[in-house]
Length: 240
Length: 240
DNA sequence: TCGTGTTTGTTATGAGCCATAACTCAACTG
DNA sequence: CAGTTGAGTTATGGCTCATAACAAACACGA
Image (cartoon, rainbow over all chains, first blue to last red; front, side, top):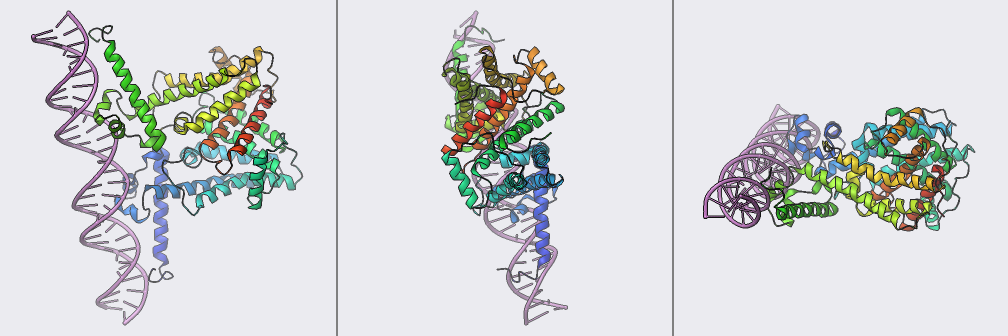
């Protein structure tokens, strides 16, 4: 297509940089004024450009949001991964707490991005057909599942509190297993989801201001308790 | 103020009816096109009016949303209350399941309203100064707390799995207790929040499409398991 | 070195929405 | 019946998304 796709890396780099600047500007606007208030006009003004110029980089607002969503998944995944990496290997209980705290902290620091990926989907926003966002979501979730795998390999994974697995759930687990998206037993797959729900619920309620009537110390204590309950129910080693 | 506030009930009724029609129309638009896409223009068109006429009833978009938020709290509270009322009195386990299922079902059937009250707050939306939305939120939450009270009075409330209560949490509990917003011990207050989080987390993830890769049966089974775990941890009787 | 085609940006333009202002008409009051 | 209040209208301004048409900067080959 291009005259010589190999010989013009300068432009490509410049283009990538511009795309990045647009996304960063959009994020900044999102942070201070909310997702809906991200206007091409404002992005352009901040960047010293005219609004129509942005259409050279994103076909429309939805395409920009798609990119932001994908980045958000990426950021969440990396944040959790980094938190886990800083825990001494082998300490599964600490890894669980670290990962969960990272999830919670990220949601608190970036409520807009959190809402973007885990809140109400944008109206008539269609995920890209290539499934790239689904894939990014999967990678973020993999952080959770790998925790169980690690515990299993270390012999620290006990039986979950609920042993029975409904056939429909078992089927889902097996499908995931065959796609290599998950590598634990159906009952621990179930336990994983049962651990995710309280983590997400607490995080989401807190990030959306529904725990504002409690002070930080109370919320922290409550969250730790929630993590202990979840670990206990899932068969993970229970944090201190 | 009015010439004779007693003698003109017709107008007031007409006005109330119009306000209600506006809200219903807004809800309908919200349901099919998302919260953000609720335009005065569209509401007016559906109602066979001109857009500026709506300003007779709501000063601006935010005021309309305030009303919708308040209604949503009301609707959620009523839905849960109704579900509980249909359970034979005395069966706390069934009441917990009924209430939780109602919470979940409502979120699924009215995702926009659910997002409105429990999702990301609207940008620069300020709750009315009279605290009416906070109060409405409290009433909705009271459905949960009254469950614990009922269990307590029936002697069906066991100790929660976590007995230690952080001083900060205890303080919050006592404050709530003195305001008569809660009538259980601090440790059960804590347990209540620990039960709410998984309920809300599962509900929220499901309502926002993050469990779409599971079929209904699997989700139902998973949800029931979640409720059992939560009941068990909170000291409530565990559902079948 | 110069000309060609691509990329990136601009100005101009249209359609749509929020919100206000000024005005008309109906309803209720005494 | 005359005055007041309230509901609804048209007219208007400012802002946004998006496209079209045009100008400048750049990369490359002859």
